[in-house]
Length: 119
Image (cartoon, rainbow, N blue to C red):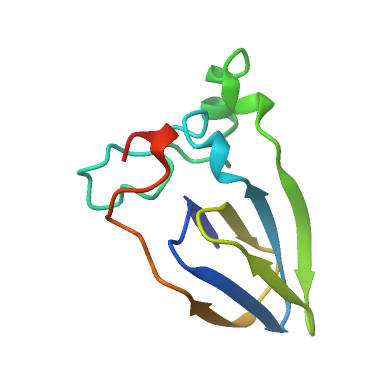
């Protein structure tokens, strides 16, 4: 199971209860290179293409997407991951898993934020 690359407006704590998942995290200053859906789109905080698709990645090999800073990690049972507001995260389940999320802070999703992305 894959969760499309996206960001959340509030801070996010993720506790892996059972199993493991791979997380790829990128800071908000790279939003233009990550090719988000247009601001008025219902899924505007999501990437416009599937990062897992090798054909999609190959089309971008000469673009800014391949230069984006990324933290790639595996969150395992008993571990907790903090994802700051507006950090992009792409999630791949590596096995059957269960996690518990807690979001906090004021959410700015759908409001004026991240000026360099033009939202």
